Length: 160
Image (tube, helix red, strand yellow):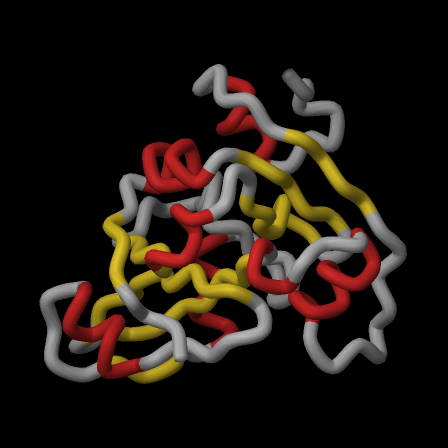
């Protein structure tokens, strides 16, 4: 099991919960158009195994959506999965404030405030998924069931 050597809130939370995870650092290019696709390419991973963390407001309440980096978040689908009517992308500053992370490095794990989380169903089809480890240029790999458990997420078809 990897130790929380990197010391991000995500790795600390995983270590504290005794969840096995792997750490994957890479050189982040500030000019990259997509942080998630950059991570997949830099780490030599299939884009469908690498997931991005997006914050939305569902009927005014912040909610986390976790979807494959090559896909987009379906706002209607996440609204329905969260029990709401309408979802819009969250204000970037509000996302950073609520999670304690910077854009491009927002992890679904170890956020400052526990937020309702929905993970796309496709995650369960992989033995390991990769999400941001809490900063740009740093991902963590873990079993989808562990991701769902530690974030208290529900799963739904929220990617398109």
